[in-house]
Structures are given as structure tokens and as C-alpha cells.
Image (cartoon, rainbow, N blue to C red; front, side):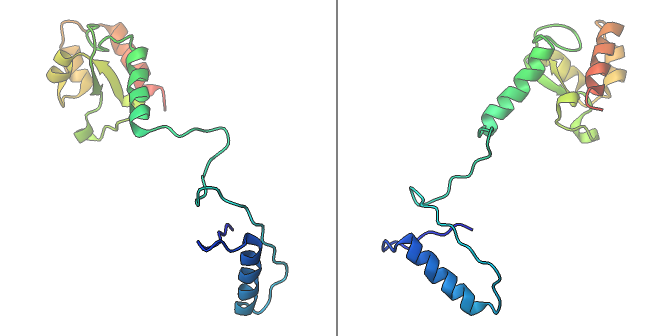
Length: 145
């Protein structure tokens, strides 16, 4: 439990003693009650988990997207041209999630053409379809399963 003294500068040890005495009055039995006083600088407690750092949502989203583009070498997973968008392989409105294994780097032309179509029905009809790309996409989809 963390306590802080009030703004009039009450000594933290006195505050802890007063608090303990009042708590004893409110409870019938206290078997072993100890209070440790930690002086706080700045009037608040800074929370931290050792070995971690706070990452903003913007930074996290950028790293998430960058990871996907880099995996596909910044090329469209479907046609191989330069990619500047991410495509939901299984469209969101058909239950596809915004997770790494359901997003592929995609050029605007393919993303617009595919739209909400089922990926394999659409992809197999494209002139740039190759079994090698289809296998790579399937491997990508299966990575987290």
C-alpha cells in the first residue's frame, strides 16, 4: 500500500502512525500490521515493469505495418508490383481480423480489384496468378495457427 502525506507537509512517519492507529480502531483484530513509507518525488507513483518500455500506439502500428511490408519485400503479395497498401486476405466483413497473418502487402490496383472477394476465387482468375505466390500466401495465412 502506498500513502502520501497531505499538502501541509506532515511527516510521512507521523502520517503512517496516525493511519495505522485509525485502522486499528476500525478493525477488531490486527495480527501483524506493518507499513512501509516510500517518499515520493513529484507527488505521484510512476508505474513500470522491469525490462519493458512504453510504446505509443502510433509507433506500434507503424512497426506492425512495416514488419508486414518488409516480409513481402515491399511487393504486392498477389502480382509482385510495388506495394503501398495492406489487404485483408479474408475481408473484415467476412470475419477477417486485422492480425498479421490476415494482412498482406498489396498494390492499390490489386487491393481495389480484389475488394471483398474471396481471395482464392479472385486470385486464381488473375493473369499474374502463380502457384508459387499462392503457396507463399497460404504459408503466410497459416503462420499463427
